[in-house]
Length: 552
Image (tube, rainbow, N blue to C red; front, side):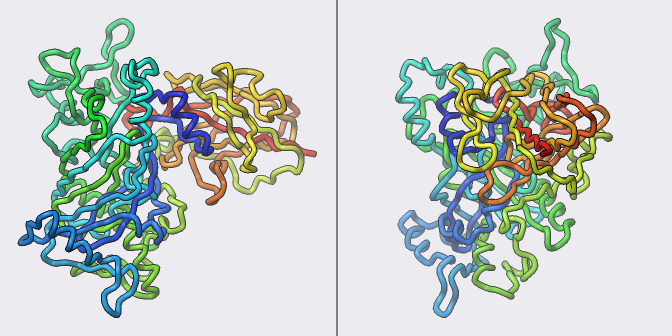
């Protein structure tokens, strides 16, 4: 699925120097948390668990627990939530948490939800922490959502639909996902259930139909059905009515794992809506197995909801008690130095078991350490990263270059000095010559957003060191694209430099050994899924950066 963002929306997003324009899924957000014995939800892309460890974010979300015998009224629930477990008991400490053995439900209220494109619905990179998830148990979630005030204002400003918000390809949907890797549960048969059609299940039925709903096969210009490298039929992203495949189901799970509303959102206005679904015990067990297979100091994971944007998750209800967010546990650790975190009847932590990857904000791609979640690049065999971290950067001038899809038109700061190296395009594109008039960066190649390829022509000279930098998908943990220069190949992924740097670290570096004035770099964007079905990682809004360090 390719989401085309409006220029006005992009202007807002890119003004903050966020380079996250690629693909259909992934991201991060800010949630709030005060907990009783009942909480659950997670935070896109999208990858990432960093801010979840911030103790400060734990003060934003409200989680409460309901016991079996309670069946409390709203008034009783409000009174009960005054005994919030994130406040200390008499003689207790800030961040104390109470386990309620009678609790049967969890409610998480998100005070500051993220409505950004492909963001983590919890915000602050928070997520439902694996340490409070029950093994061998189906978990039913009800999400309460509403369109964001910003999006509603945009809709009100476009009553006739001329800006394309109503008549275009704007989408409202979310994907229940693993916090570590952002893998969508509903993309795998049997991992998510609900009272709606599920694309992954339809794909395995005869004719890709259950008699009521169906998938439509993709075809080429000659009408031939498209198939992936393993011979499986490739389907369109939407679910259609079986008796009229010109009509799309009202609410459904796409084959890529995103739950999506078709057209009903256009009439919602400011009214809150709900969506109910079950993450099965098979999916929950898989999360726990994957985390427990990691070294103790690297263990983190759980559940989050990646959102398409333009709406907010306000509340998450779960039919199981005592579920917590990572931010709550991290706050507990911040106030209980040297103590072991025990939840219920099992130790779920210890001084060396807190969510350090989240606390430090480094969110490495743990999926590659898990064995079965291979990077697509490594699945292809020879695409290993041949760059070396110890290549010495020459002391001469640094030149900045940009490449990307045809819709990349926004200003950019490429050296983190709070001054744009690239200006906003007034002509609707950034093709050869773009970046003149005192701006440093130049356009060196245009991405074919259908094939995910680009040919870059980069000015260099002998002794130059060329760094390739990811331009989006901070929340996508895998490799974004490969670079081939002659016989040298490498991969580029998002790797945060530090909390102040707006760009990723370069993860592929090439030294020019020959006496040449230009090198040619072939770019290939990876598909997000190993089996090369739906949902590529690229579209017209993708971009990448090249830094060329010249010798003196």
